[in-house]
Amino acid sequence: MEGREDDKKGGAAAPGSSAPGTRFKNLVSREYYSHKKKVHSVAWNCIGTKLASGSIDHTARVWSIDPHGHSKVKDIELKGHSDSVDQLCWDPRHPDTVATAAADKSIRLWDARSGKCQVVELSGENINITYKHDGTHIAVGNKVYNNRTWEDELTIVDVRKLKPVHKQKFPYEINEIAWNKTGDLFFITTGLGFVEVVNYPSLDVVCKLNAHTAGCYCIAMDPLDRYFAVGSADSLVSLWNVKELLCIKTFTKLEWPVRTVSFNHTGEFIAYASEDPFIDIANIQTGRSIHQIPCKAAMNSVEWNPKYNLLAYAGDDKNKYQTDDGVFRIFGFEST
Image 1 (tube, helix red, strand yellow):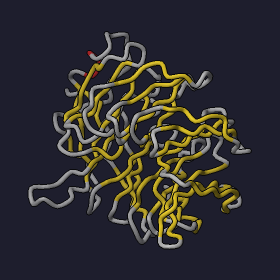
Image 2 (cartoon, one colour):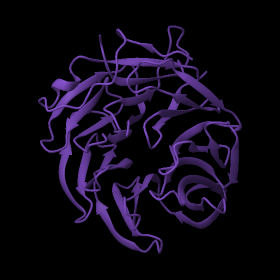
Image 3 (cartoon, helix red, strand yellow):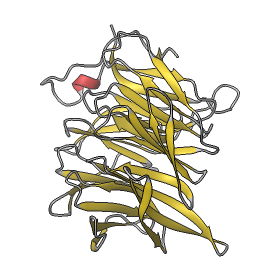
């Protein structure tokens, strides 16, 4: 499937020493179509050459994308789930292994070259998924229907054995989850406004960080392992020191609940989005907004490429007939 861009074709912007924001000023987005319904999640592989998209059309797709924009875009469809693919993530050590979490109570580990997969059946509707940085374990957040009520559950899956090794139910809503870079701490965002930090693998509680005045929805880890960022229903993104577990600043440009957040590959910039009509890109050190990407719908997922300043993003876009557009975009290509 050929990508369609909003402006003339060009490559990814080269990193440079220009003032913050100027490097983004003249860059453009490209559009990528193939899904039949809206895209819930986008994620790059560890070397930045492939991007996976997951949709409520029950499929995921893997796109081979030249970061310099010179070659034709190719994609492969990953079919097998029987319900919405809500989130996906790549093996941090293997550029051709991607994991998908779906509402059909299964997660699947796909070979992005062949389209074949291994299936792990879990007990609930899967919403969030993340890899440990050494690629040995996957954490899944799901909802389990029990005694006429929904309970939130965390499941840790051993990738080699393809079996759950830990399950824990929570009496409150849990949302996005993440390991730190060294893998000894695990972070759980909650609907009560705090972030639960636990030791790994013991899962003993270290502390509960009172992060926000409303539910915490999303979390991202700085690639340099200095910070983590939390997005909340109070419309704020908080930036935390990983070692000291202290909040050092907040990003305040949005007016609606923050749905998604991501650090760029150098740790200089953070992108975050909501139902506001733009994605904000801010400088980590100054806290200032340096660029805004216009968008036509609420955003579900933003993720920076791990090697280049290319930002993939997907939302609730509709076409002229007011049906799902099935599109995601990548910002950061030069216009030539």
